[in-house]
Length: 585
Image 1 (tube, helix red, strand yellow):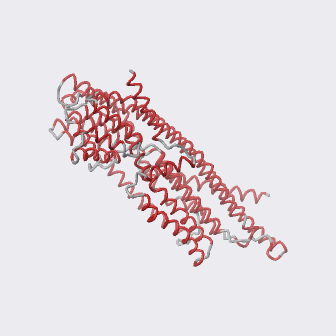
Image 2 (cartoon, rainbow, N blue to C red):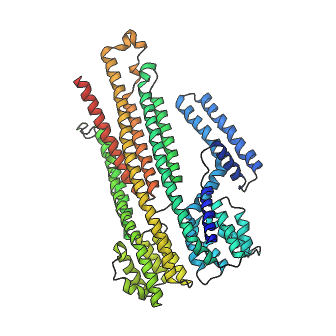
Image 3 (cartoon, rainbow, N blue to C red):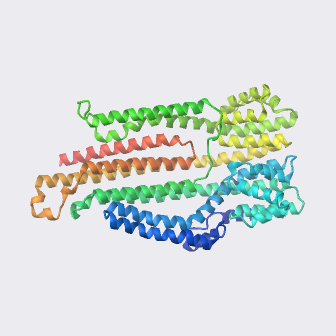
C-alpha cells in the first residue's frame, strides 16, 4: 500500500512539472534556457547562425521599406514582420520542445494502455517496445521507443539501462519519470505487466486532471479573446471617426487596424489549437471507401460549384448586367455566395453526431465481447454470432458487418479495420486495434476488455465536459460577432453622417472647413474594408470552434456561414435603424 501511494504521489508530481510553470518572465527564461540544452545544435552555433542574423534582418527590413516605400501601411506591416521574425527564431527551440512535450502528454494515456495490453501478452519485453515504435500516431513517444530499441539492439544495452539513459535525455518530465520508474522495475526483476496494471488508476487520474486543466484554460482564453476583440473593435471605430477632425485619409488606419485585428485573431487560433486537448473524433487515414466519405466529398464539391454560380450572379446584379437595378441590399451580397457551404457543414455535423453515438456504445460492446470470449474460450466470430442480436445502439450495424466478414473467413485484422472505418471513430479505431493485437498475441480477453472499457469510459466523460465548453465558446463567439459588426457599422454610419452634414452645410467653404474634414471619407472603400473584416472574423472564429471540439474540418463551414449571416443581418439592421433615427430627427 505504501508503494502504491508513493507511486501515485510521484506521478501526480510529474503532472505538475510537465505542464508550463506559468507566465512569469523568470519562469519563461528558465524554460527557454532548459530547452536550448535539448537542441541537436550547439547553443553557440545557433546564436551565431540564427539569432543574430534574425535580429539584423528584423531591424533592417522596416527601415528599407520606410526609405524606399514610405507609405504608412507597408511600413506598419514591415514593423510587424521585423518584430515577429526574431521572436520566432529565439523561441524556436522552446516551440520545438513544447511540441514534443505536448505530443507526449496527449498520447500518454493511450500509450500506457497500449503498453499495458502488450505487456500482458506472451511476447518478449523488447518486442513490446519495438511494436510501439511502429505506431506513428504516437509521434514523439514512438521516437523514444525506437531509441530505446536502438540502444538494446545496436549498442547491446539492457532494457533497464536503455530506459534509464533515455529518461535522462528527454525534455518531457512526464516521460522521463515514467522511464526511470520502469527502469527500476525492470532492474528489480518485477514483471512489467504488474507494474503497469498498478499504474493504470494513477495514469488515468492524471489524464483527467490534464484534460480538465486544458478545458479551464480554454475558458480563460475565451474571456481574454472577448476583451481583446472588443478593444480592437473600438480601435477600428476610432480610426473611422477621428479623420473627420484630423483630416487624414481614414482608409489606411482602418486597414491597419483590420490587419492587426486579423493578426491577433490568428494568434488566438494558434493558442486555442495549442491549448485544446488533442482528442479527435473522426478516424482519419483510412483507405476504405465509405458512403459517408463519398457523400461528404460530393456535397462539398457541389456546394463549392454553387458558390461560384451564386458569386457570379451577385456580381452581375451589382454591376446591373441584367438591367433590373439592385434589388437586394448591398450588404446581403456578402453572405449569399457562401450560403451553399451550409450543406457539407450539415452533412459533416450529422455524421459526427452518429460517430459520437457509436463511441457511447463501444465500451459496453468491448466489455461484453471480452467477458463472453473468456468464458466460452472460442473464436471472436462465434462470440459475435450471439452479440450481433443484442442492441448496441448506433454500433449494432457495424457489429453485424464485423461478424459477417469474420464468418466469411476474411482476415481478422482486415475485418476489424473495416469495422473501425465504418464506425468512423478515432477512439474505436485505436482501442479495437489494441484489443485485436492483444488477442493475437495471447492476452486474456476479459482483462483486455476491462482495461479498454475503463479507459474509454473516462475519455467519454471528459468529452461531455468538452462539449459543454464548446457550446459556451460557440455562444460567446456568435455574440462577439454580432457586437463587433454592430460597432463597426455604427462607425461607418457616423462617418457617412459626417459626410452628408458637411455636404449640406458646405463646411469646406466655411471657417470650420479647416477643422472638420468630411471630404476625406470614401464610404464605398470603407464599406469594402468592413466586409473584409467581417469575413476574416467569421473564418478565424470558425477555426477556433473547430479546434475547440476537434471535429471534422468541414464542420467549421456551417459556423462560418452562420456567423457571416449574423454579421450581414446585424449590419443591415444597424444601417436601417441609423437611417430611421436620422430621418425621424
